[in-house]
Amino acid sequence: MILYNITINVSPDIEQDFILWMKSTHIPEVMETGIFHEHKFFRLIHDTDDGSTNYCIQFFTESLKLMMEYESKHAPGLRTKTQSRYKDKAIAFRTLLETI
Image (tube, rainbow, N blue to C red; front, top):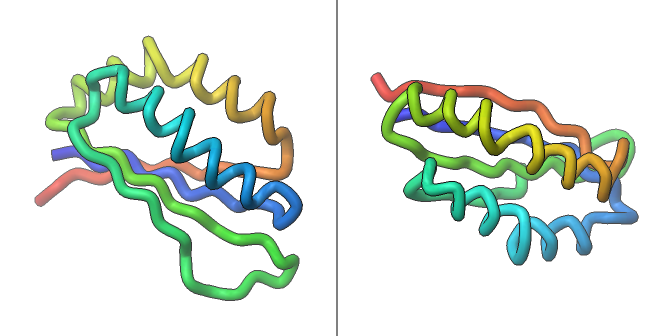
């Protein structure tokens, strides 16, 4: 199994909008691609120096092949929507993990 993990540093002035938009729009759009069979949405528990909050969204898929399909067909458009909406107030860091 492949875990696609996105950690996002979110500015306090957009935080509530970000949570609502992730839950109502972005995560459902990612799931509608059919690539992932499960997701989880977390808030990291720690303090930041600048008052921002880090969130983690995890998407689970069965294979690296499916993940590469997501990256080539779906990710660019979905990322553009998020970047256009939040600009530099939501900075994402992405990792791929494989079950051992």
